Length: 239
Ligand code: TMP
Ligand code: ASP
Image (cartoon, rainbow, N blue to C red; front, side):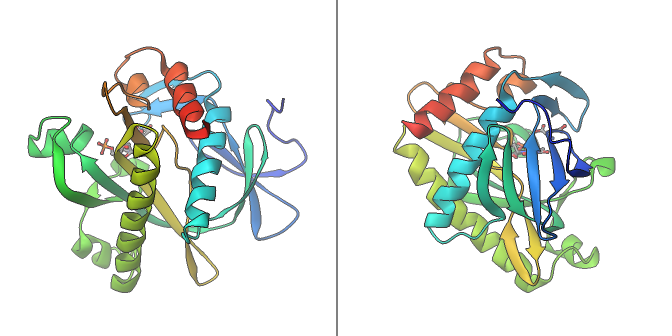
């Protein structure tokens, strides 16, 4: 077991769910997944036992699947239970959310009942800024804030829709609905790569038959059995 962060590497950054360490190679960093969980922009804090292990394993599986289908990401390889080696990125300050089924903030904002299947995937952009609470933004805001060029934004949108179709199909074969998810991207040299993680922290997964939630909404909404839900998702992905 590797339940302690590396001591020999320089800590570059500590986020809400991960620590990032510099490796000996300037272009490679180690991502170490914590059990810490937050919600509502850090207003709710807790721990989910084994979350770091499960999110590392689940993200690795998804990045490997996407790589096999031609989606380039920062992922290099899983190193141990809690960490993966990735390419160092200059993060684009946009969170791309793709939605197939209404839930969460979309349901609140547009008055759509949770569970309403959307006629086509909805792509949204959020400004990645914790002090502002990650507000929803549009192309015009992105341009005025110089967060991405129109060409790069088009690429982010197309890649995110491609990721959606690959993950949606893969999950459906395992009787899981991909409700929505959030992606982040960054530059490695001049190339844009998918970054961050793809896990129950950043996606909504529902059981196909029962709509049981297999993601962080169990923590956000105090539904119980949080670790069990993450474990079940992992087992079904692996199985
Ligand atoms: P939302 O319905 O709260 O806007 O969330 C949409 C999706 O994005 C959901 O799968 C959770 C994910 N998400 C994050 O990963 N980080 C965030 O900060 C937020 C607000 C949502
Ligand atoms: N916004 C993230 C979430 O709810 C985490 C946080 O807000 O602290 O998933």
